Amino acid sequence: DEFLEMMETVRKYFVVGLMDEMEESVKRFNAVMKLNVNNNTAFEECMVEFFGNTDGSSEKKNSNEHPKVLEGSPEWDVLAELNSYDMRLYELILELFDTQKDIIYS
Image (spheres, rainbow, N blue to C red):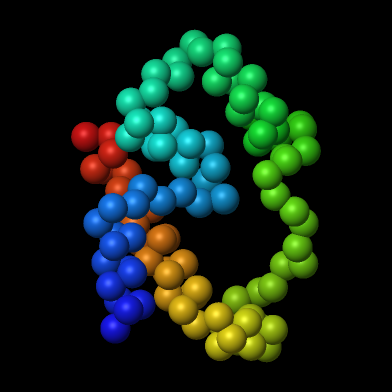
């Protein structure tokens, strides 16, 4: 099945990040690419420009507001059914985000 092959490719070759964990995601990407961002003014300016201030006082520029859909609601169920492959991929990404932490920082 092509979808299972794609999931295995993601598992083997991709470093994943989450919008809800943007700061941690960027740290991981930098660690994998061996970028030293400690005390790096250009890095800090970039983070503020694209992701807002670290204290949350600036509007984030990398996301758009969307209505919240509660898991288990009728709306959620319809979206989950229409996007079943996306939901399966998202579940894999959540799993990988947790498991990759130890690998990346080891």
